[in-house]
Length: 183
Image (tube, rainbow, N blue to C red; front, top):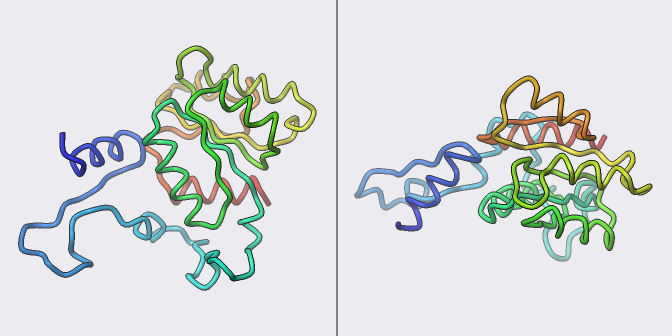
């Protein structure tokens, strides 16, 4: 499977859609691929390019906030991390809840975003495990999952998540929720 086809499949399932321009489009703005700026186009709270952290420039308020993204699908963690980094956040990723618990023990995070359906330990168990630690009792947590039933939302909240979002992820909605929970 080609890279663009795989990217389209991953994005469509987890983060939205990706489109391919017709052959013969040679202008850079018409080329095939994924532009993270497009994901932020509908975000009313988007940051101007001058506020995006750049080496040597003063860090923004967002860049001092550390976010942990947990999903057993590496492509999902990397895409979500890309969006969040583009928005100015400091992001770490883990591809299993056990790795997330180890990272969380070593590094304090200001927010945790986690999938629910993962092998060995699920996202509910991860949230409960983190909430048992003093430093994570009040840390905002977002469940991002394919589980869409009303009961799933309730179970997320009972496990310790502050919010429950369903896949495919809308980057604008995710960023708005992150900003709201970190305010």
